[in-house]
Length: 206
Image (cartoon, rainbow, N blue to C red; front, side, top):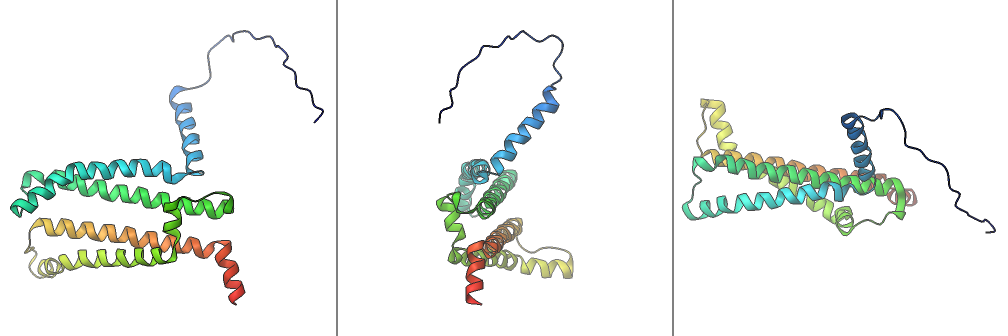
């Protein structure tokens, strides 16, 4: 209040000489600053967009493979690369999504309640959801191991496998996905245990 603002013209002339900014070096540095700012504000949006894109790609390439397997009961060897691509899309997309969720919870823990968490983050922070996530991760991993348990025993004894390669690939995929789900549940629980609300609750209980 009581402060008067005025615009004062200033002289300006074009600079002489060459710029010291490098296109590659400074461009990478500026891009890193932008990414760092996005990661410290809303990492879920930054990582969630490529994750959703990968999930869409997995559906586009995976539906024909699933349809063929349901119709003929097998997958031709010519579809091996497509199948590996679909499984890779799902695994990488899940990794990006889970990383964004945990990072968003860490930011909310650091900045306090002023940062409004999204519905997905609040759902991930639910204790019941965390328990289900850990349970689902363990079941996926055990299912993947169970699918290949006979192969593992036969390979240790005779150095060969007895089932189709599809069982091995799918079993390994379930182990990877289960490990990711289990890790997200554990990390989400650890973040909640470190939050001030949980800490005060433990102090009152004690």
